[in-house]
Image (cartoon, rainbow, N blue to C red; front, side, top):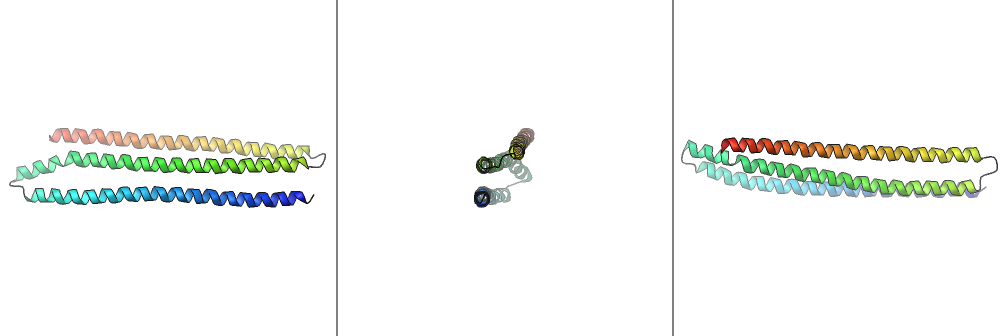
Amino acid sequence: MFAIPEQFSNATKANLESQFAIFSSLASKAFEGIERLTELNMTAAKATLEESSATAKQLLNAKDAQEFFSLTAAQAQPTAEKAISYSRQLAAIAAGTQAEFSKAAEEQIAETNRKVISLVDEVTKNAPAGSENVVAAIKATIGNANAGYEQLTKTAKQAAQAVESNVNAAVTQFTQAAQKVAAKQA
């Protein structure tokens, strides 16, 4: 009889350790994503500053208004292409970070489920006679919780794929619009 409280105590400790591990893993993945995003933004800002300076010098050296407007129009296509590239890189970082989050969470939750099922199996071995209905109810509850989690995971993946598809569609539309504008200016 004394083994059951000890088993629950050990299970509680293991659960807390597992939760700490998942939070640590998710925090690490979040910081990696933020680091990649910061690097992308710093690179984009540096390139934009350098290009703006060069463009300003060219515009200041324009001999007449037509040359000024020609130089301005010539900048439209490269600027649009850089914006598209930035958007794609940003979407890739977001999708990669989301995938890492999902993977880490799934691994930790699967491990926690395995431990809970193991604990229930161990405890039910020592269950007193006549408690079969309670044991069956506990196992059914765990099974239902796992089925609900699997459905939630599937729905979250579908939502992430939909967001990624929408971002890609928006980038494609932006690309097409930028190409049309550049073609009209040429």
